[in-house]
Length: 74
Image 1 (cartoon, helix red, strand yellow):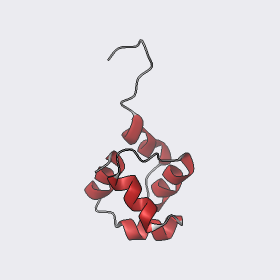
Image 2 (cartoon, helix red, strand yellow):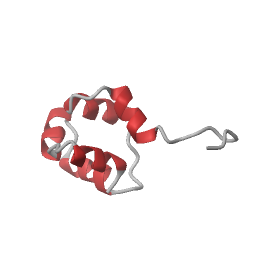
Image 3 (spheres, rainbow, N blue to C red):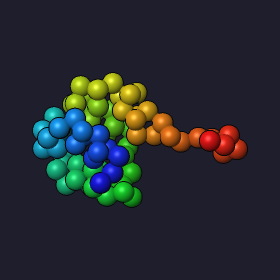
C-alpha cells in the first residue's frame, strides 16, 4: 500500500467515492493507493484532497514532508 492508500484507509475513505467526485477512474485510484511506483500528479493530489475535505497543502505535506534537500542531512 502507498502512503496515499494509508492516509485514505486511516480516514476510512471509500476510494470509489473519491474516484466519482474527482473524475479519476477506479483503476487510477487503485494504482495510486496500491502501486508504490505510481506517480501522483499535482492535479490529482488537489482533487483528492478536496474530495476528502482536506487542505491540499496538508495532504502534500503528509505525503512528501519527509523529503529533504541534498546536503541538508536529516
